[in-house]
Image 1 (cartoon, one colour):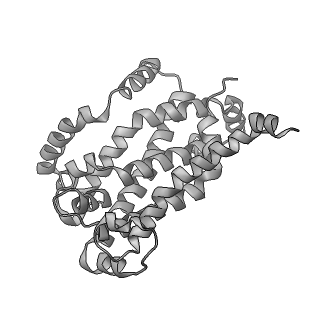
Image 2 (cartoon, rainbow, N blue to C red):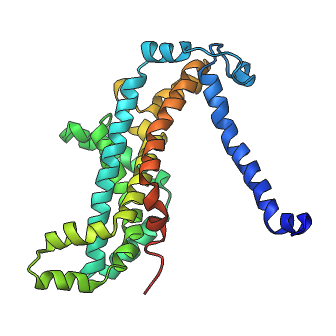
Amino acid sequence: MAFGRWFKEIGFRHVIGVIAVIYSVFPILFIISAAFDPRTGLTLSNDLFSQFSLENFTSLFNDTMFWRWFANTLEIGIFSALGTVLMGAAAAYAFSRYRFSGRKQGLLVLMVVQMFPQLLAFVAVFLLLMTLGDVVPALGLNSKMALICVYWGGALGANTFLMYGTFNSIPLELDEAAKLDGASHSQIYWTIILPLVTPILAVVGLLAFIGAFNDFVLANTVLSGRANWTLAIGMNQWVGGNERSWEWFAPGALIAAVPILLVFLFLQRYIVAGLTGGSVKG
């Protein structure tokens, strides 16, 4: 095949791919270089990997509350993901398998509610938690449990609608065959249906974990105490004010990326199947 024809049909894709890789990798190289560069000031680190030191990491671990915020972020992200998956799967299963009055209207409400941005609910969430905290302090402002509950409720509508299509793709004959064999509703749900929809559970869990891990606005609204802050709130203090502590922010951002990277690598085999599982009607 002539080079001109090869480039027109295939070669230009390699060029676009190389440009995309360079565009994606450069920020990662820059933050790695800045994390190991002992000079303070981000612009001084433009000369990539000219200096190498662990001084920034030592200062981050000894002079800040990084690990406390890291643990808070992991706790909130893990429990948010687990609760979101369990609640969304139960709601999607009910809408998919049972016929009850208000079912269609409920699905319509879920579809309409998820169209509104969550920013509209921030004032209501703040006032609700402030009032609820007077009665149940564990669910009031500056409570990690309260923030997790807000994440559960905020994501329930969209996740139920996302899972609903996948649950519909599981034949009802499986449920009926299991009932004939004497299986209870809980046995059908936990041992037959959920294993078949694992990809969509993995996708919802991944999105919920990343969303809670990276969230700043809602977390900053609910968590006021420094000891309860997440990484997004704490690290924003280092670069959001007049004093810029890039020597803490760069290594902190590098470490904070590890949990998301590990979760993504662990669940990557489910992602494509999970996103497309409920898209085909049959």
